[in-house]
Image 1 (spheres, rainbow, N blue to C red):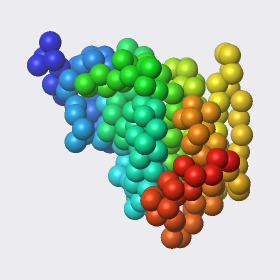
Image 2: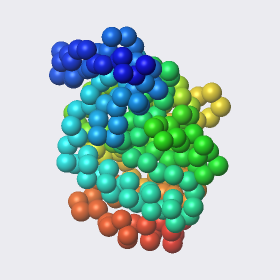
Image 3: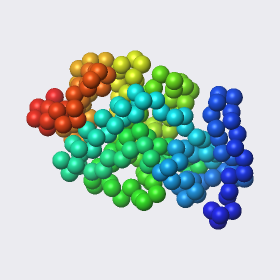
Image 4: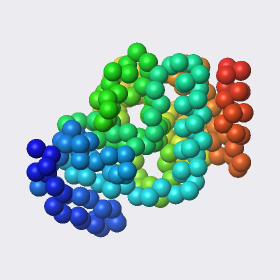
Length: 216
């Protein structure tokens, strides 16, 4: 029972992360019952790991990109776009909270009240300068193992977008520092790489107008 799974120990690790240690490994179902949208935590091998607070630059880019993609998908009736408080089951004992995810309309049955049970069609992660390389590799490994069709890593420090697209049992990789980033799973959606790192960026309304009016 969930009531018997009170977190018994809070530990700060050597790399300054906080983990919440249960009396036994938590399953994903128990995790989403115990934690909600106000808890910025992930489930890593049965242990709850509290994520580091996001910096302003991360949240500013997240907000712009989330509004733009969500508006486009709603305009076209393509599916569902969700933000960084939605848990995605990776395994029975592992769950992630992508910055942004998209699920096609014909697959919305994987979107349930407490989490996503299946691979999103698109996951977008915004990489901040302080993110640890080992954590990013583990994150990518989880999305690959789940079979996410398309994965974008938007790197604020390198000012580039790394795109992984699923092909049979593997992924092909593309790194873009200029030009257009098209999506294969969000029909007709694309972005200018320069928009992501511009200061200021074009407004969401202006960017959406361009995307809707001029295919790449």
